[in-house]
Image 1: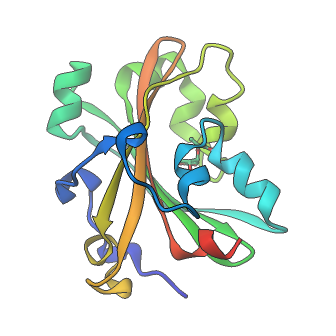
Image 2 (image 1 turned 180 degrees about the horizontal axis):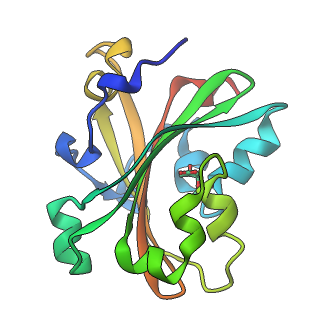
Amino acid sequence: MQFDFMHSTDSLFQLHALWQSAQQSLLPDRLKPWLLSQGSLTALLKKRCQEFRLELVTEHWQKLPEPLQQQWQQSEGLKRDVILWCDAKACIYAQSWLPESTLEQMEPLARLGAQPLGEYIFQHDSLERGPIDVALLQAGLVLPVLGEQKQLWARRSIFSVQQQPLLVQEIFLPGVLEL
Ligand SMILES: C=C(O[C@@H]1C=C(C(=O)O)C=C[C@H]1O)C(=O)O
């Protein structure tokens, strides 16, 4: 299935999703291990497929969403959207926000390109992962090709690397269930 992300929402913040603690959520059994995985999702996917591929959808310097401006007391950062493919199955649509202070502290994060974000941050001893929140997103708002009827589970965490924050949001696409 070819995904048309060009019309996807610019920011998942626009979806006004109901994010809840993963620990307090009733999660589907088949996705639970993926949604609760504390380690690198990239590493987990790579173990489950022959050919892993990262598709860089967008990487733009822009205003942070209002909630992140408040939380991080910064106004701008890098928004990075990728699709993680496993054996030609689209598995994860990830949208990450990296504020200016984080990029100043770790310059390679500003030029990851096709290198998975996880491969960089999980090699740092200073990496800390905040709690995982989950939400059930109206897929049609993110993936029009899936139509309104589909709902997709998503998770998000705020990481800290060398005491600098970044937000990672991951939407689990139907391909994950085929692995
Ligand atoms: C945070 C990770 O990085 C993965 C890769 C991403 C990227 O390259 O932008 C974003 C989110 C993750 O799916 C991870 O591997 O857990």
